[in-house]
Amino acid sequence: MTVAPNPNGNDSIYITDGYTTLATTNTVEVQDGCTLTLEPNVQLVVCAGANLIIDGGSQVIKEAGSSIDVEPGGTLTGIGSGGGNPNAPPQPTGFSVNIVGQNVVLKWNPQIPLNNLTYSVSKASNGSVSVITPSNYTSTSFTDSGAAASLPDENVADAYWVTATNSYGSSSTEPVSVGTAPTNVNSGLWSGVVYVNSAVTVPSDFPLTIEPGTRVVFNTGGGYGITANSPLSVDGSSSSPVVFTSNSASPSPGDWGSIVLNGSGANGSTIDYADIDYGTQVDVENASNVEITNCNITANSGHGIYYYNSSGSVLNNTISNSNVNHGIYVLSLTVTCDGNVIYKINQNQQGAGIQYSGSSGYIWRNDVDYYNWGIAAIWGSSPL
Image (cartoon, rainbow, N blue to C red; front, top):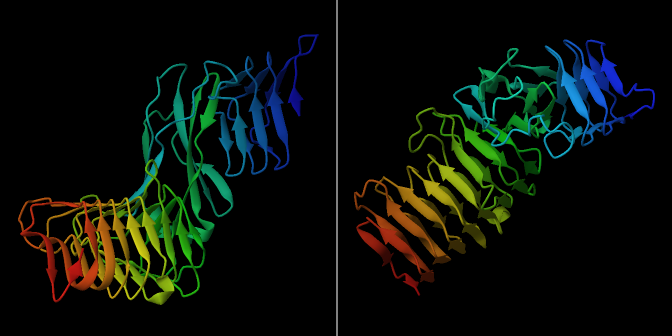
């Protein structure tokens, strides 16, 4: 459907049904010079596969209580991105979803409060979509209280997004999925927010990839961790790292367990650009060619990184903790450590920044501060 200028002046469309849904295959375009008006209490839903196009020079008028909501897989083109009415709000930026305690907490950056600007948070769950914020909501954060306790499996996760609306139009963020990790991982890809509420195992012959920007949140107190018996690929980036952290409002070292790369099935695992906070340690056991690179590992209760009878590379990481353990501990076999920054938060000077025990490999260009020993090589170790 196209809303186009009419020589007789009838160049507007009024939606008055109270609840209007665009079918999954439909495209609606509001062309230059036209007006789309949502009368009071109309909810216009852009479903998966549908597209609402707002051309430059057109206008969207949303009367009291009306909204435009874009479901996952639907698209809204124009509003807030150069098209549509220039007074319409841009897409909210800085949208983040986190789990604190048993609550799902959403935040986004404020916008200039012009033209009756309000926000609405939408939630897709069990095949239905609802707006969960009160009417005329103007805050830039929202807490879905207790929602973490009933999150579905990450395969069929809930999704959240925020919409900015004023008198001239609206614009929505991309949805963020939020789901619970199963005890035995049954999908090959994690994204969005993954809640770990039990000890998680990645089965043999079932590689798992974690996408950039994914947030893996562990329920505090159970010592829950992730044991990978297949290759684990943590594929963060400098601008969008993967985060592993605690759900505690006041986190502390050891809130959760370890990331364990376990046995030959985990050979070739990679952890790149990850922020790993308040856990126990990154643990590589009896695996080969495991690379841990460009990570920030902070406030663990064990070693920062521990290799046992394993080989690989530890490159360009920053490791900081306040316990008596080592920053990097290599026990048997061959590991390269290059370009890492390792220091104690509380400067208690216990342990070694890098300790090799009965091991070999290369130790180059590492910066170690506030440990008793910068580099320790014992039990016949011969690193270069």
